[in-house]
Each structure stands twice: as C-alpha cells, then as structure tokens.
Image (cartoon, rainbow, N blue to C red; front, side):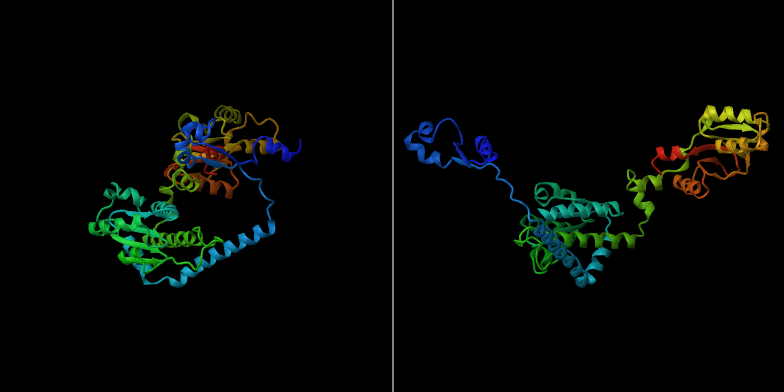
Length: 377
C-alpha cells in the first residue's frame, strides 16, 4: 500500500460530514422530511489536516529579516517622538502615592501585564487589571492615589474606554499609550504617549506585531526612566528577586552559609601536626584553624600545607603545629556578603576561609563547597 493510499484508508485526506446530534442517521431519518431542511443546516463538514507543503527556506529567512527590520524601525521611530509628555509621565509615576494600575485588552493586555511586572520589580508597586473585569467589580481596586496606564493601539478599545470616565471621577491620574493621538483614550488621558507605527510586520498588516513591540519598548523606556530617577539600585533589585541568581548573590551573607560551633575545625597553639590531622579528618573541611586560649585566630593549616610539608620533611606528625601553620591567615566577617568571600577566595586562590569577629575571635568557617551549595557561585 502506498503512502497516499494509506492516508486515504485511515481518513487523513478525506473530508466527511456528520449530523450535529447523531452520526448514524441522516437528516430525514433523524428528524423526518419536514425538519430535514432545518437539520441540514446543523450538519457540519470536518476536514482532517492537510499535508504540510515543503517550506521555502529562502523565503522564510527573507520574511523573518523583513519582520525584524520593520519592528526595529518602529522602535527607532519612537525616540524621535519623545517629548515633554514622556517627562510628565515619569514625574507622575514618581509622585504616585498609591499603585500603578496597568490595563489593556487583547495583545495590548499581554504587553500591559509585562509593563506592570517590570514596574513592580524595579521599585514601583504596580499590577494589571483586565478592563472587562474592571467593569464587573475589579474597578474597586483603583483608588484616587493611583496612576492608571491604559494601553491600546487604536485608542478605541471599548472595554477600556468605557471605564475611563469612572477612573477620572475617582481622581486617579491617567496615562494613555496609543498609536492614535486623536483617539478617545488619548483625549481622556492626562498624558498621552504616542506609540504609532507605520505598519505592522504581518504581511496582511493585521496581526499586532510592530505595534505591540513598539508599545513594549516604550513601556520599558518608561520603567527604566522611573527606576533611574528613583535611585533604584542593584541591592533594591535583589530584594524583589530573592529567588534569582542576582538575589542570592546580593542577599546571601557569610553568616548564612558558614559552619559554626562544633562544625568548625580548631586546635590550640600547643597541638601537634597529628592533632591537626585528626581535627581535619573529623570535621571534613580540608583545614583547621589554630587559636589561642581566647579563641583568637593565630593560624591555619590546610591539606595543601600538609602536602607541601611532606615534600621537605620526614616524620612530621610529632611536630608542633606552630612550626608548619600559615600565620595570620585572611579572614572574613559574618556580616559580609558571601559573594565577597568568593571574590577573596578567587583572588588569593584559597579553597577555605575562616570567619572572625572584629577582635579576631573565630566564629565560623566555610569552603567553596558551602558556597556552591548556597548557589552563590
């Protein structure tokens, strides 16, 4: 059996009809001759998937480049239209005592969600409200202290335009982002940002493509201008992104990852190399601290030190630890960022680090494995 015969046999290339209610009876049998005409209108024609035509690779690449060129031009053209209205919008967001409410429907709604998320993560409390849901109760989330940002390429989205008079009546400020300055949304707004594009990247000039890209970029420009004016820092960003790698690096301190108490290997100044080796083996940290009677750090002895000593000496196990230890080792405080420990260890090629307080008293220890486990590295 050929491939074509097989597809016909299993019904892949054959259209078929089926009554809406019963597939085993035709319209006359199911409803009688009088109702047959009515029933026939309920019949549906089902087509199975057609075979996919071979893709023209050259055309696909050409079209992709054309789309990217159109969208890039759309973004570039925005910068030529930026004016004092943009500055007023930034000032309005900075002065907002409540929250920023972003709204839009359709593809503009997706862009609105992204803008709200970007604002919220960069120091400006914001959330998305669907305009249709706003008409059915969610408008209660908007207060007079808020700033409302409405996104609509046409500026005539019915669901959005319908709620604007109510928002204005509440006393909330309104920023409109549209592609038509003469639109209803633009006219009702306190500030209008023009996101007009010459054409969509869609070959039919129908699907929102260049217009949504331009609106997205303009929203990013607004958010970045606000965060800069607010003095938003990397530390601030980390506080709103504790689950990300940047958040871990900027919010994880040495005290969060260091070993403490009995987990910290230590021997006194009167110990021998044998004593130090027993401590290193027991605590499994690859080193031990050498402390005085007040637990102040006097030195460190690592497994690397052991290998170096063995190369030059014979029986070393009875030697005083003070003869082979590294004196005045580098330490770090518990209140420093764990990433600072990483930087020190990389700079001085260390695998271990002791943690001491301002008086030099040993309070903890860590190694690269601890930092890896905390996902700081």
